[in-house]
Length: 281
Image (cartoon, rainbow, N blue to C red):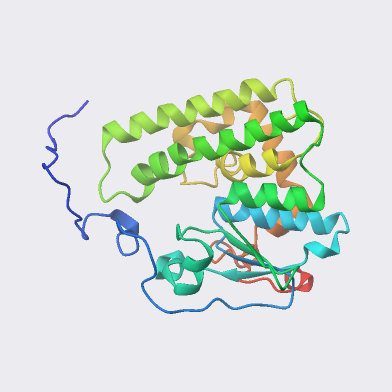
């Protein structure tokens, strides 16, 4: 390993605004709004403020799955939050989500008491409980589903903020962090591969919010569509994850939900905002 570039941490860390890589313009060590910008509100009870990243896709896929079941109360408006432009630091968004991360949801079903929900996992649970689907009620099955959901929530930072950052976004390629996080991502893929060898879905025969959450990160990864790292990580070798991922990606609701709030890729893959089912036609 090349150790010629060493770093000695200062006694007290200070923020270097020029040393943040691809997202230096929006990353900062403080919270709160930077500008006044109320959030728009559409015609449906459910208002989603998001971007088509893996965490955002979790929610739009679930909403489209609910609509596919004929649950019309799951109709929603999906507003674009452009994190590259700092929309997440607008006053309206920070009021909805003090953590300034997408996605954030506002349920106006009861106009006298709107329900704000932030963090993708919390939104998945909220919607699954609200509509009584994709989350088992039986205690043991529910525990397994939530275990895999929280596995994803705890594991994805190693994939996104760890591997993804140093492999794709850091201002320079560094051997140690790339190797460290590549090793952990491959371990996580092996966890999934061993588990899915004997399971149709993560929790057995039933498709749940755990599958939706894990697919958004690891399913897309093994399809070679995340960080352009498929060959580097040898993702095709995780054959059971690939099988599971291909089956989920073929679901019509997954195809629709994966387009919402997406502003990159092929034109047919993009839909910056969604305010009616016909927007996805």
